[in-house]
Length: 463
Image (cartoon, rainbow, N blue to C red):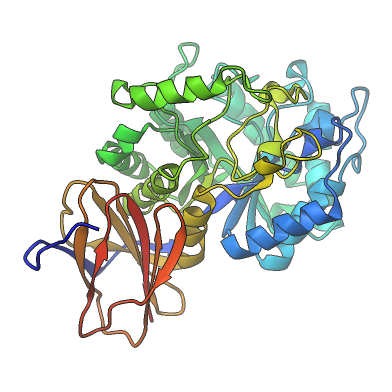
């Protein structure tokens, strides 16, 4: 480690100024392995227990869980409310037992020609009520009726007026169920930040603004984000989120969040490495994946994205995604073209013939620390200084009155951090992630500084 002089100090002052008084928390996209049945390999009890153990360490504060009805309650001819529901119920039972809030929904209607179908609306809401009231999964708090309806890949193809109409119809149907209407609201618009569909009258910001102005049925706002590395590291992404937050009058979350390294010339080396790894790959064609989730730098990028979320006034983000085994590209069922984005592939051995894919990837650890240390109900606090290039930080007062500070040093220079909290605390802990998870003794109140090495993520906790 390079020596750092005593005069070369990065001061991080956590003020008592509250940016967000009730943070909902950080989470993960965890979908119920709909396609595993079509592969002839539903998850075993051992697989589920492995998932539960890993999630217990992560402590996600919310889960975004989306289904594809042709794999579940729609059989191609009609609706069967309990069809192929075992995996979904196992997932929701975990969330229910751990007090994890669920943002639940459907990627698309059973078929695109059913997108405005009254029969689908009735069946979808009946299925939702069956989950919430029939099975007791009132961990489901928010309902997404179309995934990314602004996209040209969606059945809605950016038609805001149609989406608005369908929100009204879904809400009216939900209100017919007395035990449902007060438990679950609509999440939307579920639009993609920095994307604009030529077929739509609105870009991503217009979708959000129009939702605020004309769709009162929406109870929580959510957007999706897949920024590039330079965009996030420069601070521009955080500024964009602040612009969006200024439009809304309710909590807003990122329903999906991850990195794509294609649109910015500054990320061209990462893009080239991505495509090098795709070539000849046995189970992805690269059409919807991230070949860089194996790398240690991704374990810096993802908490850095969350720092932007927390400092912008957003109320949480769900990482895309937990597990490669959840989806194939286009939900085709093709094992040679899966959506490789996850923290592992729980069916690496059984379906893909590669047991190494079941191993935990680096970004699981840093994302887990961001979930564990910033629980639901935390107050996000303002950082007083403008931090030097290469360093980003966010801080919170947690519901039990303790403090958590997350820092990423994505630069090439080690930093000596002098940390000041709003009050003196009795105990301190410090955890680092560079290429492995490491816990070290923390500075005391008398000597409140530590070395944050280059290309390292750290969590400082005080109580």
